[in-house]
Structures are given as structure tokens and as C-alpha cells.
Amino acid sequence: MRRAARKDANHDEVAEALFKAGHTVVGTYQQGNGFPDIVSGKGGVTWMWEVKAKDGELTPAQVEFITRWRGGPLHVVKSGLEALRIAGDVASTRVAQGPKRTGPKGDAEKARIDNVFKEIRGGKG
Image (tube, rainbow, N blue to C red; front, top):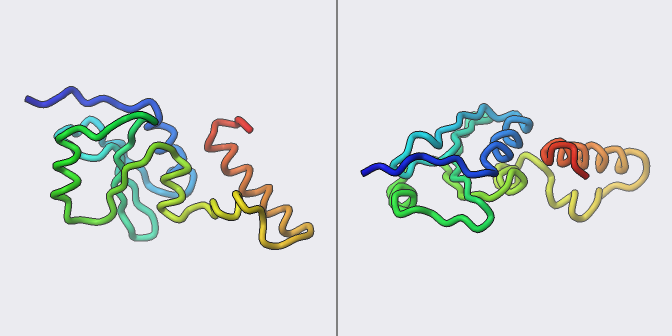
């Protein structure tokens, strides 16, 4: 018997982060049978994303799907930032460490990256 498909609370955050980073994003959480929640593509690469809440766990159907999957990247993520780090769309280590360059250009780049994260978080600091 198929379980009713349920969208995790952070699904939209992950989808929006990928979209803003230039991915084509398709929500597939209603597919069921362990199929991942989001499929995205950018630069000729297709990713599959299983979105889990902070304390969420994979269902047996999801574990089976992931185990059998022989295609491109399939990742389990809990936030948009985590998805962007995996996809390589944001210089997340530069945000954590600060810009490598100093002076006006380095400050402008850090501000640009900070603004991307602010957009992802819905305008919150």
C-alpha cells in the first residue's frame, strides 16, 4: 500500500535556493514509492534531492530507492544551503571564512554572497 506523499516543511526552501542558483527545479514529492522530492538540473547535470526535516528520517521506501538508484547524483538534504553546497553553486566556504581578497572588491564580493544567503532565508539576516 502506498503511503500518502507528504511535503516536508523545508521543501520549498530547498527548491527556491536551487532555483535562485539557476537550476531548473521540479517538485516530485507526490511521486511516492521512495522517489526523491526534487529533481533539478543545471549545466547539463541532473540532481535528485530527498528533502528531510531537521529531525526527519528516511522511510523504508526511500532507503530502497536510494539503494537501487544507478543514475546521477541523489542527495539527502535538510536545507537549501546544504543543497547549494553540494551542487557547488555558492562559495559557502568563502562566506564562512570571509572573502580571500581584501579591499573594496573583496568587500563587494562578500556582500554579494551574503545577499544570496539573505534571499535564500527569505530576507532574514
